[in-house]
Figure 1 (cartoon, rainbow, N blue to C red):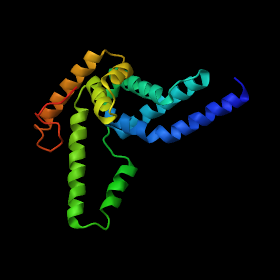
Figure 2: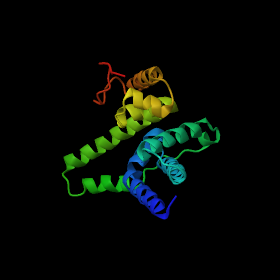
Figure 3: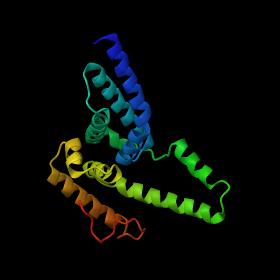
Figure 4: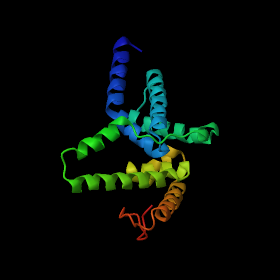
Length: 193
């Protein structure tokens, strides 16, 4: 590889990391439910993506990084030692944005922030209760708005498995969230997989 090519690859990688880091971290958090573990998953993902991109041409860094992130998450969940310790702390930037949002607002607005925070914690707790493959399917299908085909390709499973995993996950979430009692739009009216 020529020096100019190496410089172009390094520039592309730097722009990719700067542009996609937060989105990858949010996806990782939704997958694992722990900001510290999400950070570890993203770091591991970026290391693998950078090494691969330096060795060979990667057509889509975004698609490849998502695939690596999902595979790292699923592989890590197969390890027994991971289940020994969990932390549920939110990162500083999330807590700061919530407190900044409520500064200078009326009492009603502060109440809405509290309700939104409670709702967020309830949904994230329900999401954490799903098995890893179902959680990955829900995050890809409904958070990242991926098609059944894309989700199947990313997870390395059939389209039918994506549909069944989505249906089971949504059914579990409906039970946990008490048939749309929270007004989330995932109640008993049915969902498309």
